[in-house]
Length: 247
Image 1: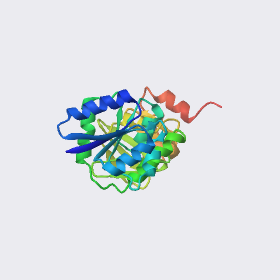
Image 2: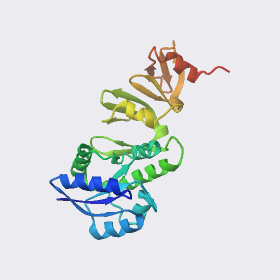
Image 3: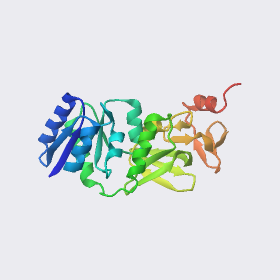
Image 4: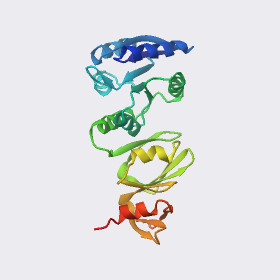
């Protein structure tokens, strides 16, 4: 049986999630809280298997709450309304989340991810810190968490040379010559690695502008390592204008 605690200050949302949890045959709601102060006591006393927690509470944030715990748990599923910056921050840290209003299928999938994952993720604190930092500072983080099939790798954004999409997957090519295969489409990362820092030169490519040294026949981006990345015909004028703006 999976025990669940809900940390949510909106009564209607809390009631709905409680109902959805009760619909699951192997989950048990063991308590709820609507504030940072009371949530600390609940979590430390009950030690739930899963914590479903709103990012913004009436007396602070989920990150404030986690810092007050003696042991920071790795079993958090964040809950958020559609807030562009909050969702981007969560994605930078590769953290699990559910959008309000919470859907039964999505909740079930989140619980299934909990069942499958390892109990010990040594990068968890770094992922949390990345998400918290992204909530408050700028539109491009210093680092991003990439979740591959086997692990989570923290990568400095300036070390990403380019990304190549392949259907539902994305290859990250890094400055040290290594690459990572991530099971998310290129479009997912186009939002997280935005222009003008990264350029979508082609349907399958997202390129870090700092590694671009020139253009070959207006058909290829030339990188510092001499590699050439195609420019799609429909994006050509936009890309060339971004790279060589008129003075």
